[in-house]
Amino acid sequence: MTDTDSSPTLERKRGSGVKMVYDLLRDEILDLELAPGSPIDEVQLAERFKMSRTPIREALVRLAGEGLIDTLPNRSTMVSSIDFLNMHTFFDALVLMYRVTTRLAAQNHRPEDLPIIRGFHEDYAAAIKSGDALAMIATNAAFHAAIAEAGRNPYFTGLFRRLLDEGRRMLRLYYQSYEEQFPQRFVDEHAEIIAAITARDLEAADRLGKAHAEQIVQQVQKLFARKNQLDIAL
Amino acid sequence: MTDTDSSPTLERKRGSGVKMVYDLLRDEILDLELAPGSPIDEVQLAERFKMSRTPIREALVRLAGEGLIDTLPNRSTMVSSIDFLNMHTFFDALVLMYRVTTRLAAQNHRPEDLPIIRGFHEDYAAAIKSGDALAMIATNAAFHAAIAEAGRNPYFTGLFRRLLDEGRRMLRLYYQSYEEQFPQRFVDEHAEIIAAITARDLEAADRLGKAHAEQIVQQVQKLFARKNQLDIAL
DNA sequence: TGTATTTTTCTTGTCGACAAGTAAAATACA
DNA sequence: TGTATTTTACTTGTCGACAAGAAAAATACA
Image (cartoon, rainbow over all chains, first blue to last red; front, side, top):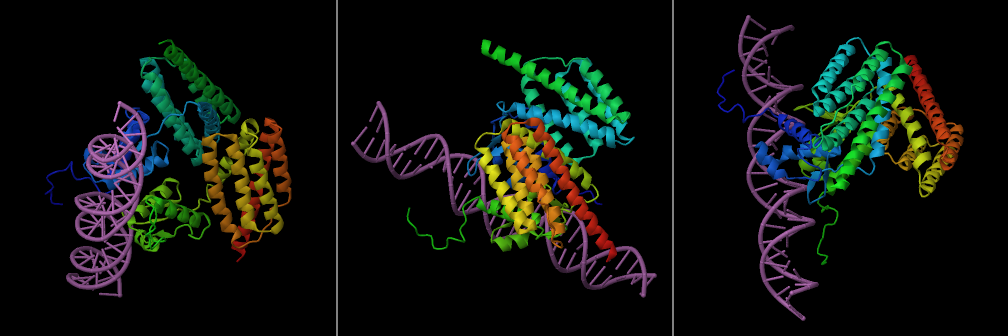
């Protein structure tokens, strides 16, 4: 292995470019660094990442497949908007997935899953304590995603992940302007959920998952209502 | 608009190429004309469709996003295999989606949805009568997809459509060698489901959707068991 | 003859250039 | 001055060619 390469940062491994662009754009979209409706320009991205348009294009096709960007044929492509009118369909799906993934975790989890779940549980508790709203969102999502993985149904985990992503985007929109606390109660509920999963108590897991999801949805809706009220007042 | 074009078939509209390739390959995969594991060669497809590899590639990226093909980096890409080991996760998801979409249809359907649903119901009855197994699969899927649309939750309809696609592929595998009848009973159950939706009876819709789904799953599993038994005997 | 190494072949990944299509700008016309 | 039409500018879609990586084939060596 002769080390004659002089520019290590410029030379990426073949195929790593699309993944990098995909991951980065995905994060920027979900973190609202790229606001909904923002135009996405291929040549601009090509210059930014110092590669040709081809791999950029592939990343964009993937993102479009997940509904994160919208493409108008022959015209432009932009970050997809958040559909507030049909938010209830989102909440319906979210609650059901919370329920079913928690139940399946109680049924199908393996011993090695529990430490992972507990780890995210502690991260979440820490986020609550520190008052970092964005960390709360992230760790809560990670906690429930880990539970879903332990349930071992890829169809459900797939949908659930998409919903959590979309939720991340929506919450980010509101937490930009507010510092809000998720109540301590959520931490206790997480602990109960872990107990039910560990005990393989399907019914309890189902019930707790549903109740917890509805709590969260209520909290979010309360947040939205207050925000809208303020918007109207201003 | 001067009509100087001499070769109408060769000149496709800009952007229509990827859709054509995508749709066609998708159908071929779901109909098992392309068997699971079949290699997919870009240049071969490019020659077949008389276009460059670029639009072919875009179609393949889309198909990969839906899990219909698997790509080994720098090596090959092939039609994704059917996972028989974890078929129960597929059935779990399918039953739940049958349930929830039927319930939501009872809740959210609009008058204009019912004729569409009834239309597919009649198509299904006709398929049963004619004994055409593949038509049974297709019309049954169309019937339930229409119900899901009437439920108006894009998250659920999205997952459900994917599940129905995957089911189409699995059943196609078994109906290649067998001529099997779905019982007349399924037609009656469809009629009951329509009645519950029309009456906006959520609980009945939920119950019927679940029972119907479990019937179908049982039927399919029975089919699989007999097929496997035969395979062993041979 | 059997194994390690090199060479070849084949497929995918990336590139730069060009063509088609659309929106905005500029011009013509009333 | 206001509207219709042409021109321009810019973005996306497609192409052909080349480079990188990996498997298969061929060769060298014991």
